Length: 148
Image (tube, rainbow, N blue to C red; front, side, top):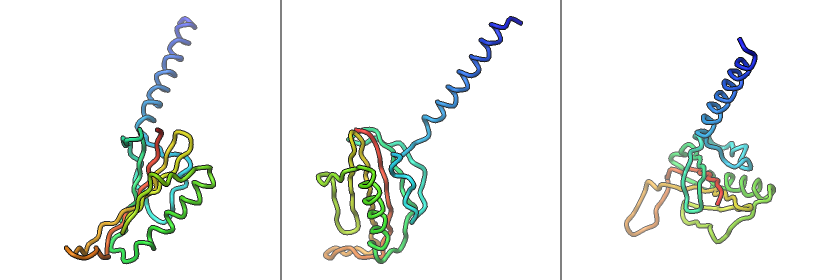
């Protein structure tokens, strides 16, 4: 066989193999590297691609904490972990995008054209028509990162 033909086949195989590998990587959602290691106080699902009003992003949610009677016991260490971690990595808290209330909080961090949202929400099991919701409740933690 001709050496040029063999080299052409080898190059073609390498290029196609690389393309196949690269195409497979496109399906693997990734969060911003500054979120890792993920908060260890829970188990996390796989990151999923998500479209936001700010641009493309990836989101990961925790397993559900069920029958929680003290939301702060679940959420406080989670939010503090990311506040310390992201601030140390040069992220700035965007107070104009933050929200919170009984059983939920959204904290947004920015760095250049990137954003990270650290949040949790609760689903109250006891609801009264004329009174505030009460625990027990289910709590879920969420991380979202993307580029504007």
